[in-house]
Length: 265
Image (cartoon, rainbow, N blue to C red; front, side, top):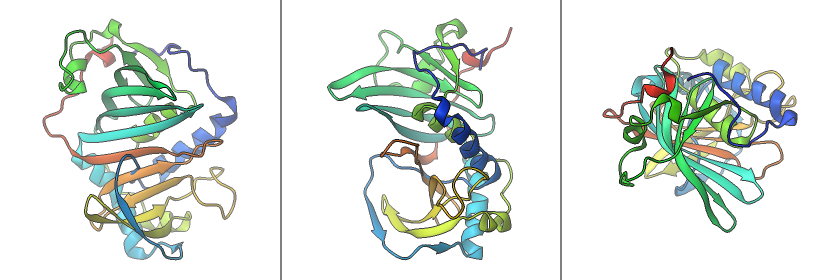
């Protein structure tokens, strides 16, 4: 990503800054998983409990499985408060921790804004949709035609969209986590759901130090299948009733991330 400057008129929320750092530490040190968007789910209610050895093993494999599946189709929905929500649909390549997609902002009275978005571990960049481009053209193909100077970059704030993108791009890893450490860090089994006809275990994630009070549940909830495949993750944000949510819907082998936003020199 090019040098980040402030853009988009979205100031940082100081009260959330420390919480966000702790939350991202969960991803760096813990397991990854799936999210929430528009979906049908049937939950089997049961008392939550610590994860078993098998469940900890599947959580430990989930980040590596996501990395190996790259590039992966993703959908992120963030509630910004005040009736404003943002939806991002795109792809993430976990081999270089970069994402590209299309965003749409909606308010109480209807659509507010839309365009292209790229992001990595350092921040994000926005650009208008290219004029005259068909709406069914994938965002990554449209982004190929945006020159480097056509993007408006900025560093991350602690707002829900930024926190979700920052979390999302760090979910994959080139090695599995330590299942014993996951179990010892408070990962818990919460129940079972069916998403698009497939069964998933729902887990409260491991807790990084400072991310949640002692004994409290992690702000991250994961959906993982029997093979350690990631499908969904939800992230509770301070002061908001609706969590930031992510769906990971499978490999997109033909997708190619644009080079222009990250060119140097």
